Image (cartoon, rainbow, N blue to C red; front, side, top):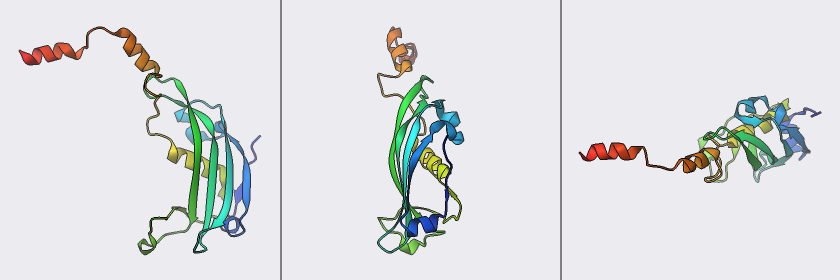
Length: 161
């Protein structure tokens, strides 16, 4: 069973704490509609740190696999999850401070749900319409087996008249 952790994000970042573990994909309820099956696990490492100016940050590294539904053939497909997100803990960032090395920011939270943060980051990094690679998708294979004349060739011949 997955233990759900809640942290004080500012304290976690300032003290440079670290939290590691695994979370089952089946426990991520906002992902359910995108999944072909709820199988899979995601390993995570959440680390508190400070940037060069001393601003508190969280670094979240994720590694795992989930099974999404291909939007062409509606079959399941493996989708590897490998990412590292750096999140600045700030209520608001003035435009004058925007530079090239800025990170996404989240508001500091005295009761931050780590599982919800992990699920948020996965959702933000999923493709809008997941599809198999060309040549692997069942829809592509079924279309190539049909062969025959292109159905638009008839329209082309009508246009030429």
